Image 1 (tube, rainbow, N blue to C red):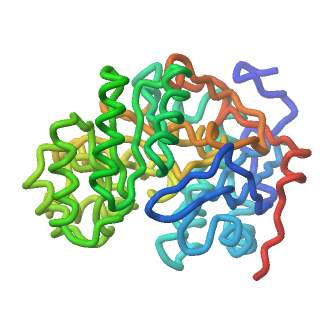
Image 2 (image 1 turned 60 degrees about the vertical axis):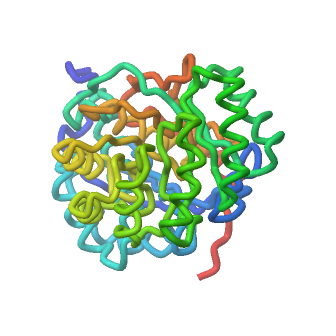
Length: 382
């Protein structure tokens, strides 16, 4: 063994030898209902990147838009094989540039690009014996305050779910709301009364049709003490979001409005929010997420890290981003794996007292469970 912990007979500069993409369907522990609809299972794709040093890097295409991640994975697999097989694993810039060139078909291709970056960082970290965040500038914190989402439903059902989360140690909750401001206010008020120390967030997932409708809901919530109001209006209604931001005291969080750096620049220029919820998948990778965070910091905005929710591979990637961010005051959604009934990998993610602990395992800290992958593989009709 050499000082990096690698076997001496393995190549010091390995090349990528293969790309395999497997579409999967993994059930949630319980259905998630939001303004976008009901989700009972995640249909994503698992990307395996094999290298000549015997290491396999894992990535996840987590997509709920434009179809789903499973379908996208089947579409991009041959493109990625042609683009990156044979390239040097340790030259991440070259690999990502080639992958990006092959995935020029709309913003949803960013989720496939993110999966490639995950797999490359996972393989690099395993090869070098370091966690992925060490390859991106290093960690700035030891843990991340988590927020758990309450599926939209009756007040009693949402309160029961909240109690389970608080009993498990979580200290931040996100209310998934529809368009009924009175209902949302009732739930938020009951939560505030029962859990005065818990941070409360509200996510409308673009449910409101007009800024005035969103403002009416915000006015109901202002006396309750809400940490953030997330994406009440459609993604492209930056003017409406800017109007709302100027009228309410609740910090306004952008989610669907900001995928990549261009989106962030437009939102900041129009003063359309106060906080950006950064998704590794939608940004196109962890490095891109860090650049968005830098844009926000320069503008005086806060950031959080969002979740689709992902399986453990995608959650680990989000965790690498979260611990590497220079600033992260807002509760984040880096617990996607916890919403699922099972997974397709063995992972090293650990939660203690409502906080996700800094990952320390090499790469993303994930290893494929081949039996579980086979059990959850789904057929995708093209």
